[in-house]
Image (cartoon, rainbow, N blue to C red; front, side):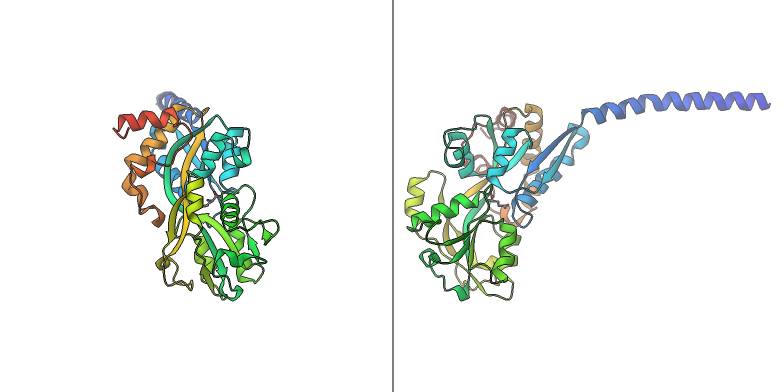
Length: 329
Ligand code: GLU
């Protein structure tokens, strides 16, 4: 009897081990197959960071199906993202449409060295070149920035170039005519509230955490119109007129919308990232479009069509495959 129990136990154990074996192998196979991708974004008070999170969330929901695990990284911004994608440190990144154009065509930061492997995936929300000033600094137009302490943005950000373009269009040399600060946008609201700067530029979608923070402090603030936009829009194909809705920031002194100019946030990758991965991400974002749109108020204006506009780098073949399949192209 005892012997019988012992034998049964051995048999059961063998069976159990036998059964668990294939499952283990399957699990290892799946694990081995997981492709990790990192999405470069911007500062955590911007819109890129939650956008990276929104894309990652949608893709990670299908982790079993695709074996893709997306994570998000807070970075210095557009210019940094392009360079990190090109260096292979990031698989994806969110990049201003103007920066995408400059990188692929070898202009500005990439003067003479076009980033040939940069690939476009889709466009996302519009971004406005936004200038916020303390009301006590007496800045009503961009020309009033002369002699003021102004954050134009960190090297690596998208906004630094937009601030310089806006200043130049108003006849202001940023190195001579203003007292420039070059810190990250996430630090600017604190500096403004602490009386350490008079104004700052940030190119971002609205509403954004950065401007909520900057407009709800003790020191009163106002969005400053950038009206020298005709020349900018004529000179640069990637700029378009835009405005900042007053209703989004009740803490600011503005009663009306503020005219300015803007670009688009775009989702970029490298030609070296596989078609399968780019296809899967593109497909999941587009097939879950309504759910995606709900993830941030800055996406309100998105349409599937608008997400295919503002791209100047060649489309990644993985994205193109989906657009053709879905009849979007
Ligand atoms: N447009 C900014 C940049 O390219 C980032 C804005 C954001 O993080 O939402 O650096």
